[in-house]
Amino acid sequence: MNYLITGLPRSRTAWFAEFMGCPHEPIVRMNNISDIDEFFEKNEGCSDFGMGFWLGYILEKIKPRVLVIERPIEDVKKSLKSLNLDIPDTNFCELLADNISQYRANELVKVVHFDDLNNTDVMESIFYHLRPDEKFDKERFLALRDTIIEADCNNLSITGHLMQKEITPLLKVNGQMNFEQILENINIDLIKNQILARDDLWNKNPVRLSNGGPHRETHDIYIRGEDETPYINKEKSWVNHGNPHIPVWFESCDYLPEAKKIAIELSSLLKSEMIGLVLIYKVEPGKMIYPHIDKGWHPSYFEKFNVCIQSNEKAAFVYDDNRMVQKAGDVHWFRNDIVHSVINEGDCDHIIMTVCLRFDDGYRCPHSPNGWSLTVEK
Image (tube, rainbow, N blue to C red; front, side, top):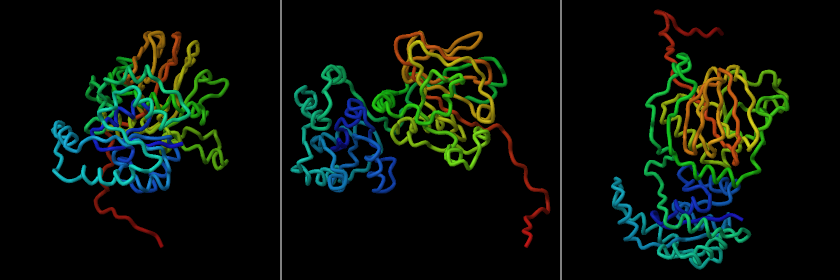
C-alpha cells in the first residue's frame, strides 16, 4: 500500500524521508498531475509537503495512508526566515494549511503535531499507520531522533567537499595517476536506503554478467546506458552492442530516483557535456571483479567516476601498482584503460555507483567555406 507524509514546509519531512527510506519532495521533478500517478505506481511512498496541495486528488486516486504533520504557521515562517533565502512574503503557508485541513477527517489520514514527533510511542503509531505490515525499528528511531536532517537549499545531494576543481581527459593522457578523489562526504543515505529497499532490481539487465566475463561474480543495476530494446527485438545484432550511441535512462532509475539525481548533480558540478553509463554494482564478501581492461567506444569516449555507497577497509579497486580504497560518500575519478580489478575481503557488501561523463575535448567545427550554401537537389 502507498503512503504519503505531508504538512507545511520545515515540518521534518526531510527527516521522515531518511527514517522511512523514501524519496523527499519528488514533486519538484514533476511536470503535470499524471506524474503523481506514475510516481506512486513505482514507489511505495514519499515525504513531500508540496503534495499537500494535491491531497484531495491523491486520496481519491491513489488512496495512500497519509501522515499530516501539523506545525503552527508562525513557527514555520520563522524557521523559513532563518534560512536567509529570498522568499517572497505571501500567504503560501495559509493556502497549504487550508487545503490540507479539509481532509483531516479522512479515514486514511493520521494527524500528528510537530512537537510530538520525538515521542517513541507516537512515532511507533505513525510507522504502523504508514507501514502496517512491517516492524517498527525502535533502535533506528532513537539513533535518528535528535539528528537534524534538512533538504539542501539548492536541492543538492552532492554537498561534500570539492577536492579537485576540474577533471579533464588530460589526466588519462598524462598517465600520472590511476585515480583521483574528487569529493568526500556526499550524502548517500537516501540512495543507500532506496537500494536496500529494492532487492528485486538487481540483475534486471544482465548484459555485463556473462559466465566468462570479469564481472561474473557481481550484481548490478543499470540506471542509464545503451538502449537494449533493438537487440532484444532482434532489430540489431548483439555484436554491435557498445558501438556509438546516445545513452537512455533505464526503468530502474524511476525506482531509485536518487541515483539519477546524483548523476545529474555530479555532471553539473564537474561541468560535463553528457552523461553516459550509470551503473550500480555490488561485490559481496569473498567475491571479486577479475582483472580486465575496458575496451570499445564507450570507455574511450567517457571519463569514469565511482560514487561509494557502502564499503569496508578490505575492499579495493586494484591496479598493478596501487589500489583505491573508498569510504561511503567518496567520489573518485579512475582509469579503466589499463588492467584493473575489484576485491572484497571484508564482511559487508561493496556497493558502488559508476557514473560516466563526457567532457569538452576542445574540438570545434570550423566555419563553412566562403560562398558555401546548402543546395537541396530536387
